[in-house]
Image: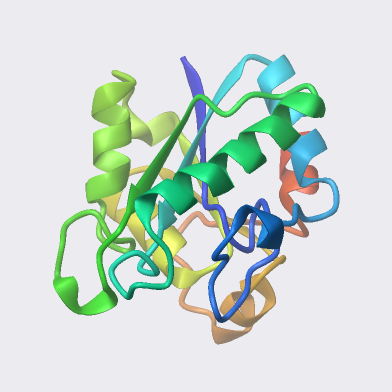
Length: 177
Protein backbone atom coordinates (compact mmCIF):
# COMPACT_ATOMS: atom_id res chain seq x y z
CA UNK A 1 0.00 0.00 0.00
CA UNK A 2 1.22 3.48 -0.87
CA UNK A 3 0.51 5.83 2.04
CA UNK A 4 1.30 9.50 2.71
CA UNK A 5 0.67 11.15 6.08
CA UNK A 6 0.06 14.89 6.02
CA UNK A 7 0.10 17.47 8.76
CA UNK A 8 -2.91 19.77 8.45
CA UNK A 9 -2.23 23.40 9.48
CA UNK A 10 0.57 24.96 7.45
CA UNK A 11 0.73 21.97 5.08
CA UNK A 12 -2.79 21.62 3.64
CA UNK A 13 -4.35 24.85 4.87
CA UNK A 14 -3.29 28.23 6.18
CA UNK A 15 -2.20 28.16 9.80
CA UNK A 16 -3.39 30.66 12.40
CA UNK A 17 -1.63 31.37 15.68
CA UNK A 18 -5.05 31.59 17.33
CA UNK A 19 -6.13 28.19 15.89
CA UNK A 20 -8.64 27.31 13.21
CA UNK A 21 -11.79 27.43 15.32
CA UNK A 22 -14.56 27.01 12.73
CA UNK A 23 -15.14 25.64 9.24
CA UNK A 24 -15.30 29.24 7.95
CA UNK A 25 -11.70 29.83 9.11
CA UNK A 26 -10.34 26.80 7.22
CA UNK A 27 -8.70 27.93 3.95
CA UNK A 28 -6.59 25.65 1.74
CA UNK A 29 -3.10 26.65 0.71
CA UNK A 30 -2.72 27.28 -3.00
CA UNK A 31 -2.25 23.98 -4.83
CA UNK A 32 -2.74 21.75 -1.77
CA UNK A 33 -6.10 20.32 -2.81
CA UNK A 34 -4.81 19.54 -6.29
CA UNK A 35 -1.71 17.96 -4.74
CA UNK A 36 -3.84 15.60 -2.66
CA UNK A 37 -5.90 14.79 -5.77
CA UNK A 38 -2.71 14.05 -7.70
CA UNK A 39 -1.46 11.68 -5.00
CA UNK A 40 -4.88 10.01 -4.72
CA UNK A 41 -5.07 9.50 -8.47
CA UNK A 42 -1.59 7.95 -8.40
CA UNK A 43 -2.81 5.33 -5.93
CA UNK A 44 -1.69 6.86 -2.63
CA UNK A 45 -3.84 6.63 0.47
CA UNK A 46 -3.84 9.97 2.31
CA UNK A 47 -4.05 10.29 6.08
CA UNK A 48 -3.96 13.52 8.06
CA UNK A 49 -2.19 13.58 11.44
CA UNK A 50 -2.77 16.79 13.37
CA UNK A 51 -2.27 18.15 16.87
CA UNK A 52 -5.43 19.95 17.98
CA UNK A 53 -4.74 21.29 21.47
CA UNK A 54 -7.49 23.86 20.90
CA UNK A 55 -9.88 21.18 22.16
CA UNK A 56 -8.07 20.82 25.51
CA UNK A 57 -7.74 24.60 25.75
CA UNK A 58 -11.49 25.13 25.20
CA UNK A 59 -11.19 27.05 21.91
CA UNK A 60 -13.49 24.57 20.12
CA UNK A 61 -15.04 21.17 20.74
CA UNK A 62 -14.73 17.84 18.95
CA UNK A 63 -17.95 18.42 16.99
CA UNK A 64 -16.50 21.66 15.60
CA UNK A 65 -13.27 19.88 14.69
CA UNK A 66 -15.30 17.24 12.83
CA UNK A 67 -17.11 20.03 10.96
CA UNK A 68 -13.76 21.62 10.02
CA UNK A 69 -12.54 18.25 8.72
CA UNK A 70 -15.80 17.76 6.79
CA UNK A 71 -15.12 21.09 5.07
CA UNK A 72 -11.57 19.95 4.26
CA UNK A 73 -12.75 16.56 2.97
CA UNK A 74 -15.40 18.15 0.74
CA UNK A 75 -12.86 20.59 -0.72
CA UNK A 76 -10.42 17.74 -1.42
CA UNK A 77 -13.19 15.67 -3.04
CA UNK A 78 -14.22 18.59 -5.24
CA UNK A 79 -10.61 18.75 -6.48
CA UNK A 80 -10.71 15.01 -7.31
CA UNK A 81 -8.88 13.69 -4.26
CA UNK A 82 -9.65 11.76 -1.10
CA UNK A 83 -8.48 11.79 2.50
CA UNK A 84 -8.82 8.27 3.86
CA UNK A 85 -8.62 9.19 7.55
CA UNK A 86 -7.91 12.04 9.95
CA UNK A 87 -6.10 11.28 13.20
CA UNK A 88 -5.82 14.02 15.81
CA UNK A 89 -4.40 14.59 19.26
CA UNK A 90 -6.82 16.66 21.38
CA UNK A 91 -4.41 17.02 24.31
CA UNK A 92 -2.63 20.13 25.59
CA UNK A 93 1.08 20.55 24.95
CA UNK A 94 1.97 19.78 28.58
CA UNK A 95 -0.09 16.58 28.77
CA UNK A 96 2.84 14.23 28.05
CA UNK A 97 0.60 11.99 25.94
CA UNK A 98 2.04 9.54 23.41
CA UNK A 99 -0.10 10.82 20.52
CA UNK A 100 0.95 14.48 20.40
CA UNK A 101 3.60 15.13 17.77
CA UNK A 102 6.64 15.03 18.10
CA UNK A 103 5.82 11.82 19.96
CA UNK A 104 5.41 8.96 17.47
CA UNK A 105 2.18 7.48 18.90
CA UNK A 106 -0.22 8.92 16.34
CA UNK A 107 1.93 7.78 13.40
CA UNK A 108 2.48 4.34 14.92
CA UNK A 109 -1.30 3.99 15.30
CA UNK A 110 -1.78 4.99 11.65
CA UNK A 111 0.70 2.31 10.60
CA UNK A 112 -1.11 -0.26 12.74
CA UNK A 113 -4.58 0.66 11.50
CA UNK A 114 -3.51 0.65 7.85
CA UNK A 115 -1.32 -2.43 8.36
CA UNK A 116 1.71 -0.80 6.76
CA UNK A 117 5.36 -0.45 7.73
CA UNK A 118 6.16 3.22 8.23
CA UNK A 119 9.63 2.93 6.71
CA UNK A 120 8.16 3.54 3.24
CA UNK A 121 5.60 6.13 4.38
CA UNK A 122 6.19 9.87 3.94
CA UNK A 123 5.20 12.23 6.75
CA UNK A 124 4.83 15.74 5.31
CA UNK A 125 4.75 18.77 7.58
CA UNK A 126 5.98 22.29 8.21
CA UNK A 127 7.21 22.11 11.80
CA UNK A 128 9.95 20.34 13.75
CA UNK A 129 7.33 18.32 15.63
CA UNK A 130 6.08 16.79 12.35
CA UNK A 131 9.59 15.82 11.30
CA UNK A 132 10.44 14.57 14.79
CA UNK A 133 7.37 12.35 14.88
CA UNK A 134 8.27 10.95 11.45
CA UNK A 135 11.83 10.17 12.53
CA UNK A 136 10.73 8.66 15.86
CA UNK A 137 8.15 6.44 14.13
CA UNK A 138 10.55 5.32 11.40
CA UNK A 139 8.70 7.19 8.63
CA UNK A 140 10.28 9.36 5.94
CA UNK A 141 10.27 13.05 7.00
CA UNK A 142 9.35 15.69 4.42
CA UNK A 143 9.46 19.44 5.13
CA UNK A 144 7.30 21.83 3.13
CA UNK A 145 8.23 25.50 3.23
CA UNK A 146 4.63 26.68 3.67
CA UNK A 147 3.22 27.57 7.08
CA UNK A 148 6.14 27.58 9.51
CA UNK A 149 8.36 25.63 7.10
CA UNK A 150 10.72 28.49 6.26
CA UNK A 151 11.42 29.03 9.96
CA UNK A 152 11.86 25.28 10.50
CA UNK A 153 14.42 25.15 7.67
CA UNK A 154 16.27 28.21 9.00
CA UNK A 155 16.47 26.69 12.49
CA UNK A 156 18.14 23.61 11.02
CA UNK A 157 18.32 20.41 13.06
CA UNK A 158 16.31 18.47 10.49
CA UNK A 159 16.23 14.71 11.00
CA UNK A 160 18.63 12.81 8.72
CA UNK A 161 17.14 12.12 5.31
CA UNK A 162 14.57 14.92 5.46
CA UNK A 163 13.47 15.97 1.99
CA UNK A 164 12.51 19.62 1.47
CA UNK A 165 9.91 20.96 -0.99
CA UNK A 166 8.46 24.42 -1.57
CA UNK A 167 4.93 23.20 -0.91
CA UNK A 168 2.64 20.17 -1.00
CA UNK A 169 2.17 20.56 -4.78
CA UNK A 170 5.95 20.30 -5.36
CA UNK A 171 6.10 17.19 -3.17
CA UNK A 172 3.18 15.59 -5.06
CA UNK A 173 4.79 16.40 -8.42
CA UNK A 174 7.99 14.72 -7.21
CA UNK A 175 6.22 11.62 -5.87
CA UNK A 176 3.60 11.27 -8.60
CA UNK A 177 5.19 12.78 -11.74
